[in-house]
Length: 297
Image: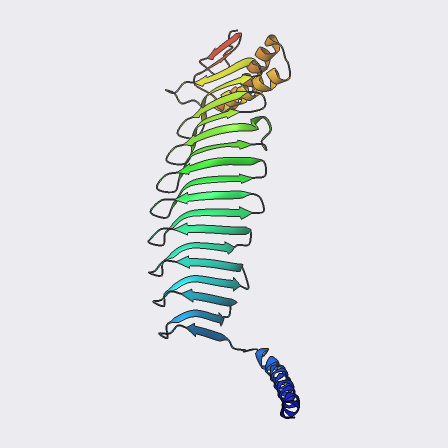
């Protein structure tokens, strides 16, 4: 009799308990979904040291993560004008690395212990680039690639360009590999190129004018040399150099090439008035001591 009474009582108690738990759960769910709205949020550790900060500034939202000493170590931000940025700092608060979005693309920078810029890797619409800087933060080496061109540039401690090595596919007959060296004034003094028609070497004087050149067009070498003592205007040599190269590319025979060469020199002698110059090409040696003097082949 007692067992008959206890069983229904126990069952009723269990049902009541389950119903109560379910009711409590339904009551708590809306509270768990509540949202805290604020402009700034600071999360601290057990020692009340700020470890995480979230704030909304005039330029966009920022999230800051601190170490146990409260120093900023990792910062995330979204600038409304430029885009997102991620910055990493050392224990002293000095910037060490940063990745950001720029108007032209994305950029990743590395810094030394003093925070000076030492390396930059960038990706933009035209291509990619990798830059290395010296201890003073000035650019020393640049490796880049864009549409049709790739190369390496080397700078001195002042940031002046001194050498360039690369490949270019945008300059007509000059398409191909090239090497250029510059003086302290960043003027090209030595230029070498292996293009469509063949290799070329050009040497320039301190004014940046061509003083000597050697070129092989297909199977024909072309050479131009200027007297360095009198420092003649090398414009005639450059024009004759180009005219002869063009004639050889067009398949002209040797006599036609010689005629084109002499005509080019004669046409431009009055304009440039060289004092002395010597040109040597296959089958032709032309030496002019005075303006308009005929050469010999």
